[in-house]
Amino acid sequence: MVSFSNGQIVELAASYPRDRATDVPVSVAVSLRFNTALDPETLRHIGLFDEEDKEVEVSRSTDLTNASITISPREFLNPDSNFTLRGSAQVNAKDGSELQPFQITFRTGVKSFDPGNRLVFELETFDEARSMTTILFGPDRRLYAADAFGHLVRWEIDEAGRPVDKRTLLSDPRESRQYIDLEWDPDSTAERLILWVSFSERLAEQNERFYFTGTIARIEFTGQTHDPDIRERTLIRGLPHGRERQGGFDTLPHQPNGLVFRDGKLYQSVGSCSSSGGPPNWGVKEQLLSACILEIDYEQIDKPLDVHPGSGFDPFAIDSPVKIFATGVRNALEIVAHSNGRLYTSTNINDRAGPGDGAPDHPDIPGDQNQLVKDTTPDHESLFILERGRHYGFPNPVRKQYVLHGGNPTPGEDPFEIKGYPVGTQPDAGFAPELMFPIWQYGGTSANGMIEYLPAFEHPLRGSLLSCFYSANKIAAMQLAEDGLPVRVDELRSPRGKLPFTGPLDLTQDAESGIIYIADFGRQSTFGSDGSLKLLRPVFQTSRPIKNS
Image (tube, rainbow, N blue to C red; front, top):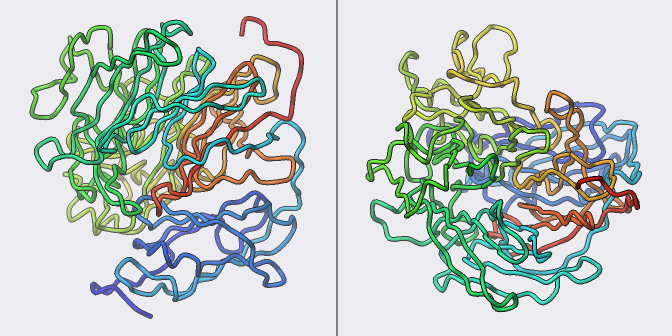
């Protein structure tokens, strides 16, 4: 057994399902969390085996720190059967230390795969482009997408709903611009296209703006539809983000992410600058505008607004066009304005390998919080209903928020608790567990792009939230109850079994056909070199249109 130089053993810290679990869904994606970052090249030595000790074909993916690993079977597992997951000493930490071997056994439930029609879609791959981060269907019945290398592209849509005749609209010659979201202006029409984009710069000079390249811009297309004039105007610049290397490329682990319009305002999620609010493991500490949801009165911005910390910008000023709407949102790729009147986001939580990625020091708790809250924290990936002034559990000392998730307020089991805190540690003010739904229990590892499915015809999933579970290589359907939270979480499927994704990051829809288009980014370890673009065609069809759709 090999240990770190500081004496820490390289070992498995937590798993879902847990050892000896029963009634595990046949669609399970196994989540493993280790106490340090692992070498992705050695993950092939973690294997899943059936009752006859035959290895099950799986895909393996990692989070940003390489400490959280997802093992996804290529096909649904056999029901009412035993499975064993094994990790050997051939798995290495980043520093070359060997993993302490482990074994997890579990038994699947008796319910086998029943395709039905509600969840079944036929999949087609229509483009092999790599590293696509965002995709959006247009009011002009064209498909738009953008990537992590500064390309904004467009396809025509043929009569069968397939994208054809790809065209590059914008191209960054430095390949520095990392797009993360596209959103149509509420006033956009097929004749007047106005597209809002969110991006940051992967490549930048190491000056005071190195960690503050987050930008929101407005793009208007005019003139010829096949060769339009493109005018881009920056609305906001200077938003914060971290930095790291992924798959051999400079990239941005969390950046200013999703955009959505509602009631005359623009909302954006801005990711955290660190794993857990403490040490600046991605190069910069948390900022006033990090790990939060912004509310933007965009019609009041007539020239680029600089929100860099050195600009003097104050989001709390009465007349500020940019205000903080909600806090504690670690890394939300997308925001959805649902037809039920609520704002939703699905959030990626933790990515924490150990003390170096730990929680901030609480002024009322003695000692170093990195030693107090030192274990790898549990998975808390969640769906949030976003409400003004509420807090969703990610600490930010700049805003005097110090407690990770729900703290540890009582000796019993508390919502989203962190057991490393002393009993009596209260969550930060405004903490909203009643607005948080734990999707990690349904394989929701690295929840990212999300839409409300709204085909223009009757469909059993109409009104459900569809979310990309990136690390689990699947798309989930969340049917909502009257209180706005999910009543069930299912996985979209093909008529033959699992849908083959390598890292679905974002999705969009054509309401007329019900087709879903997906940016399948690919693996983080290769920075999306195995990515592609796919479509899902609903098997369930009806001729009954939705009135006033």
